[in-house]
Length: 156
Image (cartoon, rainbow, N blue to C red; front, top):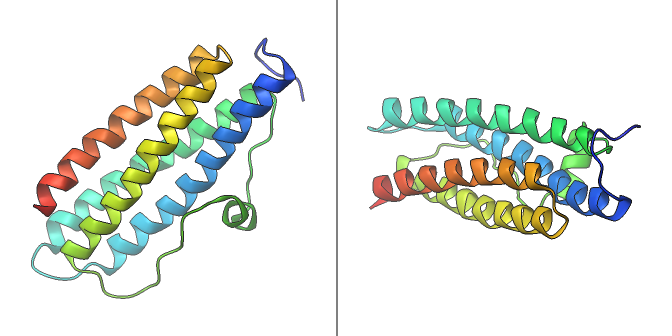
């Protein structure tokens, strides 16, 4: 595969690994948001149900953008659930009833994970002078930090 960038092999491999981990984790997070969206019950159902849909729609865009960046660096993105599960450090959520409070705690835990993960991606990209991937990470980090603020306010 021909890379669309001018980075050496070490750079494309290092940044590609970080992006591949991010891609796998985003897929599992997408599943988390759906599990919560489908299974939330209680007096805050309508508010939280709608917010989770907005979030998973945004994550779908992050997934696509991440896979495309992997390709731009000359790597291949994982495409199977098996590959995602082998790569991710996140656990899947079981199908059961979730309250708004439980949902908030799960989402906040996931957001903390992504804030750390994306900060690592930005650092790795910076070490290899990959400003485009670093900028991509900054945009994603901005969204995750904003969501963390919203959910923290909701949970308190």
